[in-house]
Image 1 (cartoon, rainbow, N blue to C red):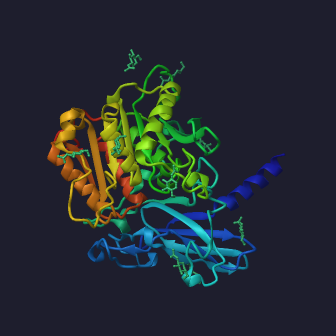
Image 2: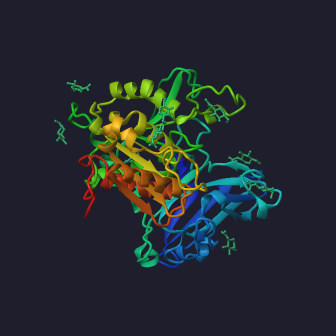
Image 3: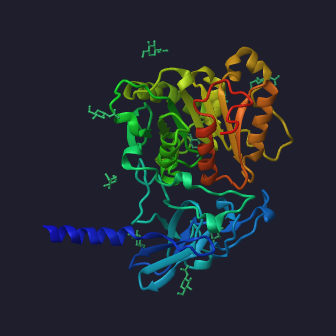
Length: 447
Ligand SMILES: *[C@@H]1O[C@H](CO)[C@@H](O)[C@H](O)[C@H]1NC(C)=O
Ligand SMILES: *[C@@H]1O[C@H](CO)[C@@H](O)[C@H](O)[C@H]1NC(C)=O
Ligand SMILES: *[C@@H]1O[C@H](CO)[C@@H](O)[C@H](O)[C@H]1NC(C)=O
Ligand SMILES: *[C@@H]1O[C@H](CO)[C@@H](O)[C@H](O)[C@H]1NC(C)=O
Ligand SMILES: *[C@@H]1O[C@H](CO)[C@@H](O)[C@H](O)[C@H]1NC(C)=O
Ligand SMILES: *[C@@H]1O[C@H](CO)[C@@H](O)[C@H](O)[C@H]1NC(C)=O
Ligand SMILES: *[C@@H]1O[C@H](CO)[C@@H](O)[C@H](O)[C@H]1NC(C)=O
Ligand SMILES: *[C@@H]1O[C@H](CO)[C@@H](O)[C@H](O)[C@H]1NC(C)=O
Ligand SMILES: *[C@@H]1O[C@H](CO)[C@@H](O)[C@H](O)[C@H]1NC(C)=O
């Protein structure tokens, strides 16, 4: 009995060592990561998603440097992940592949590309893409998360750079088990949904550590947190370790204990124009999603969780295309939420290259008929190299024009990617959520 138990533990150990993060206390970063993949039927493997690097002195919206991770210097940060980032894994013996590099503070996402005809030209269309079988993604519907994730700590001796702080340790696990919230996959009834099953739709929910404690009457503030284009309900947890960030925000006293609901608009309706599309990849426009959430998701959450029924204790936030949805709620459901977090986007004008125009953004005649547009707690964030930089800045200009006071996080090293939104979320939790509204020019000052 004991013997077989210890054999099982040995096996578990071997499997879980597929990603090894080692503190080396040596340059260039103080940490080294080794990833191992075993598959006897494969002849070559590319690891996809782990970054190549650039620095602020050679980066613009259109161009960047291209350093291998082994060339890391303090102040470097990941290059635009949208252009593809690939490393060839070493074949150490038949069927065994390894990859070793120094890595720095952050959450890293990767997948494997198998058997590319030309490994040096491999990409996600030419190779078979899989997640790491020994480090499977957290997902609400099988196949909805296409990447595996790990976290590397900050090492002040090797990564500190006064002009560019890229410490993302806020996403590391926080505290003891009793200070960790729970993260769960749930479903609700949403007529028309095609995923995960007819009429049933999925969401992920974070309940703070104290939720199941002694006080069974307490009602919690409620945040809805949306993914972006091509995303899914589990994105914030799988790609950004949002429960770790929340545990830390709450545990360190930056933010009140909050229930966080992460819904998904994919698969919420059948697609009549594109029936061939993958079920989970179908989606309606933001106003349709907003009305479906409002009709079916919100009442479900309010009757199944101990959450406040006051708008001043409710927030909606989202990234990229999820910020278009957030803007939709801001404009059309203004008084239902007290707070809006608009990360890397705005009103979906998608007009980065057009002549400047605020058409489609909030304006004074909208305020005249809907004065609550000025009384909400608005948080706007975006990155220096964000593809929606212009859209986000125009949103700020429109908000300034109507006299709305909002809180901003500008992420100086960020492209349109998860490290940007983790940083934005951290700042939203510290500086904006559940702070007195309407915001003033002192909100967040000195924190
Ligand atoms: C092994 O490789 C094959 C392709 O040769 C692939 O279909 C399969 O999913 C891989 N298995 C694992 C466990 O990664
Ligand atoms: C591959 O193996 C060589 C020789 O052992 C080593 O120098 C190199 O760093 C390895 N590359 C990776 C990506 O692990
Ligand atoms: C993938 O690689 C092939 C062959 O090199 C190339 O033709 C194709 O454009 C690449 N696709 C992407 C998305 O980079
Ligand atoms: C903490 O939680 C993890 C995962 O659920 C579990 O494996 C571990 O035993 C727990 N530790 C303690 C001290 O309860
Ligand atoms: C919860 O109740 C138990 C049993 O009455 C008690 O021992 C414990 O101290 C309480 N915990 C808190 C945090 O109040
Ligand atoms: C259907 O698919 C088209 C094309 O992919 C997309 O533009 C549209 O938003 C989808 N509609 C729904 C309801 O999923
Ligand atoms: C909110 O809940 C309280 C009791 O918990 C109730 O008295 C009040 O009417 C509710 N308000 C709304 C707007 O539903
Ligand atoms: C607000 O609602 C109207 C009417 O349904 C719709 O036409 C408009 O697109 C919505 N605005 C946004 C920003 O979603
Ligand atoms: C303000 O926005 C509304 C809604 O988009 C639009 O109908 C109206 O023309 C705009 N007014 C001005 C003065 O731009």
